Amino acid sequence: MNLIWFWSRVVNKKIQKITAKLGSRRALLGVDAGILIAFFTVTMLAIYLAAPLIMSTLFSIIIGGPNGIYSYLLELPLIVAPQDSNGTIGQQLGIPMLRVFSLMQTIALAMFAVVLIVAAICYVLENFRIMNEGTAANIIMNSVFTLILIFACQPLYNTAAAAINLFVGWPDVGGLGLLIPSGNTIDILVGYATGGIGTVALPNMDPFTGFFFSGILIMLVASLLMLTLVMGVTRLFFTGVLAAVLPLILVLRLIPLTKPFADTLLQDLIGFMFASIMASIVLLFGYQVLISANLNPLTQILMAIITLFAAAYMSTIFVGKFGALGMAAANLVGGAVTTAAGAAMSMAGGAILGGGAGMASRLSRLSGKGLTKTEMLNQASQGFVSGAAPGAVSGFLSAGGGGRGGRLVMGSMGMRGLGRTVVSSMDMQQRSAQDFLSNRAGSTLSAVLYKNSSGDVLPSASPESSALFMSELDKKSSEDVYAGYVVANYPELAENLKDLRPAGLEIKRHLQSLPPEVAYSNWHRAQTHGSLPQEGRATFYQNARDEVGTNKETVNTIQKGIYTPNLEALDFSPRFAIDT
Image 1 (cartoon, rainbow, N blue to C red):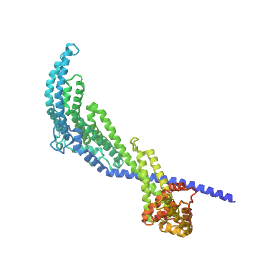
Image 2 (tube, rainbow, N blue to C red):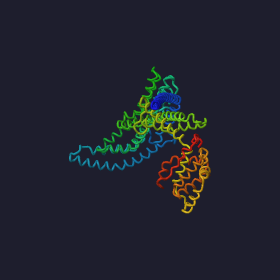
Image 3 (cartoon, helix red, strand yellow):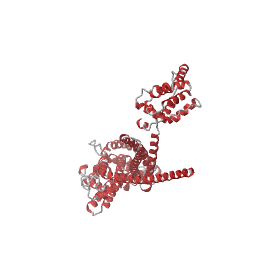
Image 4 (tube, rainbow, N blue to C red):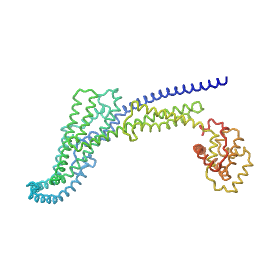
């Protein structure tokens, strides 16, 4: 009969365990799905509401609005000192271009001696029919024309560049407005590219569609604007470099061996100048399409994005060698923006999921333990914080933020990753709550004894004083030992221990099993803790519990067969961990 009763109990417990496990999994799946749906809904709503501010920040502050688009994609820098210290980037390049141009002029004039030597060598080689007749004469005749161009190339380039700037610009940036009448054209293009939710409120996207596409549009337009910034700065830099080294390029064209390279550099400069005109035409054409054609909202968005993209990439079309650099910049910027956005969203999602699961798990473990509302809120916040940190890290790594290639994790892979975050956070909080509740006064006093015993021997622990202490300890009753060690120095522990005589006896036996110097140091070290504030003693208790394993090993190395106090059996302190 007893055997049947025993096995019925075992089977009943097993069934209860399986049922609880299945129930927890169903609850977990429900919590997981609910948190994920709520997170993505709130995130999409926040992005939709914050889209105008985000786009205005990107377009106005980072790019500089329509004037920034002009400077990065259309303007040509001049080899003159700017009149305004707060001018555009193209204007600010005037001073370094002027300095480099003056240096290149000096070097070009000095290289005329090299050109004359080359002409003489060519003349000698002509006599041996190694080179075509007239090569030396052509070099000398071209040298005269080049000498004139060395001094005339600066005003010639400035005139051509200034004429192009007048042609492609609008009055606000010093242009004539022949192609683009005003900066409002650029505003409208960017407004259409953001679906009417960004810098310009356009009625081309209804709120429902904007709600679901705002996140995609922000990432896409952010990448495009950052690409405009990178490509524009690169275009201005190389245009300025090629214009500044014009004197050297002209001289290198006189030498037969360097003439092909010099011609390529000159063609690149002309390509950058012509690309500015074509970029402005592309912007004008895209603007006319958007305001004239009857297109659906998605086509309008794509048309505006393609217009901005084509204008930014126009330099790569007319300057062939600039194309590879442009593609590298595009990959770099696009990957960086996508990775940053994906990592940020995954970190936020992981933090919310991990924090929510950690808070729920900790509260479920502490419910019914007699905690007040304030204590429950404190434990809930601790559970959320401790669960949010690993959740954010997990979300960051799942998004490829650890250097494994940027991607925004969605679909089943992202759900599984976030689900694992919930599970690990809940398990961690269950262990934390269990460990928290297992901190009793008796186990804490045992940890305190080991910690006081494992410290260094006090300087005052001489053989004589230690022997005298052991003699006095033998004469003390268990109650006196308890009062002198626990009540006087650890009142929080004394309030939660019952049966004072057995507790004092355990402490006395532990001290008597130690070497006299160690026992003396233990006792007198404890006497210094009574004057500590309550917060200081709470920290000491926590440190003692954390180090109990190490301290036990330390004490065991001091003397084998040391007496282990059994104070846990005397414990009656269900609220000790909460109170301290």
